[in-house]
Length: 198
Image (tube, rainbow, N blue to C red):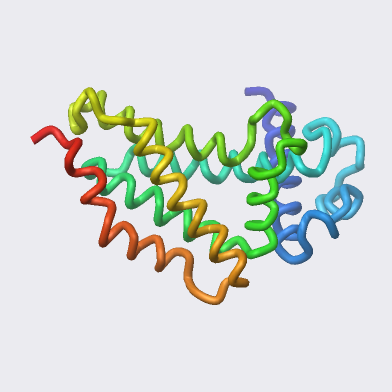
């Protein structure tokens, strides 16, 4: 990779991190592109080199962080139930630690089809991650070949998103991470175990 390419990656990363810090405090609606670029020490034109609009930076932040969570879960040294636990708890922990404001943007990103008319949003990326973990377990021989991947993916995504939305609506009055841990401890095994190869 050339110095110029490395510098471009660093600039984009800086814009994403700076935007995250501001959005976590103020929300996306109250954040301007000019504020992000000024805090990043770059011009507005530089922002548009990487992003078309400020909503795109929220998706980029989601894509970057949640891909990392997926990669860590897929590499985790344990069975499929343990890998799903790692993913789901890390997912909840990251959202809880980020802020209610950023969580609201991710929810809006998922429920408003006008933001990403091509269907590429946080929800579609998260569905792909859970499906990927299950498909990987089938390839490894941990899960039966006839495992209903789509149904399990929908169910686990519904749990994560339902808990995320309730946590957001409550104003963070309880721990999203702890609630996810309780779900995993009490219910995840009973959902996945019937599909394990013995």
